Amino acid sequence: MDRTLLDYFRCPKEFVDVGVGSGLSTESGFFRFGQEVMCYGQSVGGARATHADQRLTDKSTDTRIKSGRVELPFDLTEIVDNLRCERYASQFRPRLAGVSGSNVAKQIYYFTRPFLPVVLRRYFQRVYLRGWEKIAFPEWPVDFSVDTLMERVLALVMLSQGRERIPFIWFWPNGAPSCAIMTHDVEDAEGRNFCNSLMNLDDQFSIKSAFQIVPEARYETQNGFLHSFHARGFEVNIHDLNHDGSLFREKEEFCRRAAEINRYAKDFGAKGFRSGAMYRNQDWYDALDFSYDMSIPTVAHLEPQRGGCCTVMPYFIGKILELPLTTIQDYSLFHILGDYSINLWKQQIELIMKRKGLVSFITHPDYLIEKRAQSVYLDLLTHLSRLRAEKKLWITLPAEVNRWWRSRSQMSLVQDGDQWRIEGPDSERARIAYASLQGDRVAYSLDLQPRSSLQ
Image (cartoon, rainbow, N blue to C red; front, top):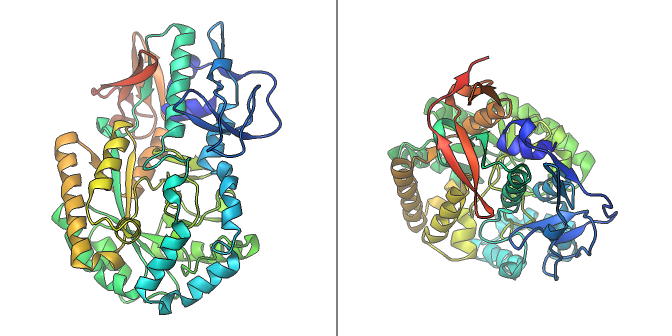
């Protein structure tokens, strides 16, 4: 039985019998599981590549099915953890250890950043990010490696047991097809002063958003500033400590800063966290006292720290729930790509909704003051509002996604005669879905009738 697959789908455990074949390699590397799924880790037999752009072995032919049991040529939990936690990202480390990515260069940049003209800052950032479009993995503009792998393994489970379909607990409450969250990182005083206007824009479309506030050094957070968000039904989270780019530079210093960040979280009434510039080290997250984090992109080609968690679904890192960033940031769209349209956002939204995932955005009040950027943002809000009305997209706050995903993680399907019911907290909002095979692919169908038993 593999807990990773069960936790993803919340299906009955007696339906899942997945194991690992014998002879796992001692070293890790890249390989494929079918043409669509990239994996990184140990595997049974064959070669593993050191970089994703090399010729890769397809391990799917090494899968064995024995008496209803699926034996994979790898440990599913290890592979999924390696992707979600970006353990494959060593392929980027030689570059990050170079001049442009060194700690010294980064410290100089962040020290001089307040004094650099915006045009010069953008030039340095474009130079640093050059060649991003040639990165083989994760896949741009959205990577679904974890999600596709889960579906492939579930399909094998159905084939191994001769099942036409398997019930599971649907990903989102009340049968919503997908979920979206809007978040705003407030970087400087100018952005701080635009927050009220940005709330007005969001309220025009009845979209409540989360504001991530830098607690030290950047701007004043007193005199009713934080209260204004709560009073209007918006959310406040912590954004780094002082946004100097050094939070994850060294473990001891990180722990010292984490203690300060945790103190600010209590003062601000914040349950969520996002690091500055999306720097991250998931192995250190246990020092953070938050319910959820929003610091890991699905694809990080246009972020200072390359990598990506390769999924559009929330997942747990220890006690913290990760809500990955699944779309391009407004700064990267406007100032790196030079694109003042919502075309890329629309493409990403469509792809994510097809996979029933979380559509998450970072936009900045600092960069939405300009009228041209503001017009693009209004187009995005209009599009999201239309999707909510026509497609039933669930647009909510990060804290609500956190609440739901934690409740779902405690739910279970219980057979009641020839039917199934859902037990667990918040189960009245949950819906039963069915995964079935269409050829060699998984298709979903939804039972919209509540079938819950509160406990």
